[in-house]
Amino acid sequence: ITEHREYRELVSRTNSAMNYTPAVTDLYDESKTSTLSQYTFDYLYSAFLLKGDVKYRDKIQDYARILLAGSIDKDKLSTSNFHSAYAVTVLSTIYDACQESLTEAEKTAAEEVIVYLVNRYYNSYRGKQENHIFDNHTWQIVMRGLLQGAFVVCQEYPDMMKALEYFYE
Image (cartoon, rainbow, N blue to C red; front, side, top):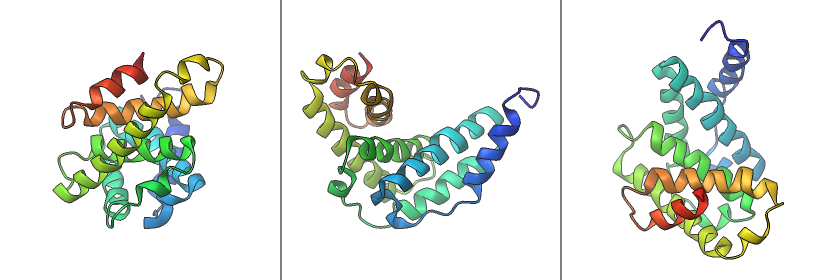
């Protein structure tokens, strides 16, 4: 992996994520949630999976401890479909990467937000979004995040299988 031409960039980007400390309010700011989405999923989780170094997963867990410390106002995460997708990506990455180390309260907090947002957009998009085939950002960003969210909680919430199937197909 160290010989790959993008390795140095992966390390550089991941170091940015390692040096970042989120605030509990970052989930409510769309631009900060976008950054958190990149840091957790694109950088830290990718580095953890590719390199196997647990320090990257541990940093995701540090993010989790901050972001899941209080109650999350789900409605504030619904200001736009992008904001919702970024929030679901952050929380589903935390949920997937740190499943074994999250407390029950943290798991429940993440699950509740993921399920709420996935259901919100599943009910909103179903029967309508299929006709917007040129709405590329929705397909590339929003639906990918919602698919990821539905996927990580479908074992605990079987009703998420309908949303998972919809967003996948």
